[in-house]
Amino acid sequence: LLAGTDPAGALGPGSFHAQLVERLGIANALTSGGMWQELDLEDLIELAPDSILIFDPRDDEAMIGEPEPITWAQVEAALGPIASLPIPAIEQRRVGVIDHPQALLPSSTLAQVADQIRKTLADWRERAGEP
Image 1 (tube, helix red, strand yellow):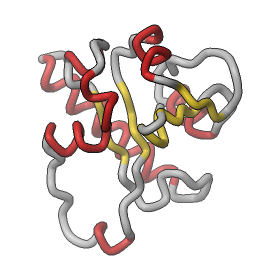
Image 2 (image 1 turned 180 degrees about the horizontal axis):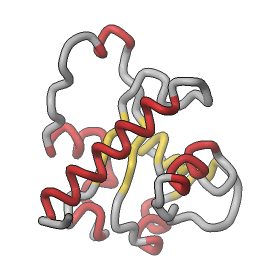
Image 3 (image 1 turned 30 degrees about the horizontal axis):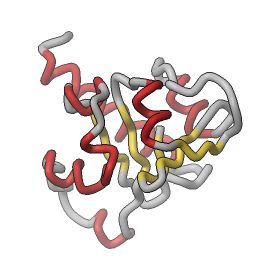
Image 4 (image 1 turned 90 degrees about the vertical axis):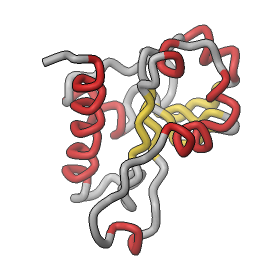
């Protein structure tokens, strides 16, 4: 779970993001430490996450109409230097950008954020041919 990529700002145990994904059945790669942790690239290589969710809110105006599917080039741009790391999440292209305008706020819109996470997970399963 990242809220920044240069340097990597990870959302650790106790953060509302970690609690949200745990309720969705997702294991956070960070199992100890604070709610906010700054990681360097070596830390990410050592963690070797099999998937990454980046919380990168867009402007409210961008929510008008149907969302455009994000391309891998856009994901790589959002990842910055992380995009070149030899980690499973990058190699398997299991990176999701959660761009709901309130994605970083503990508010009543978290249900919409959870829906976006669920859709990302479903897309990954579909791409992998999983049920």
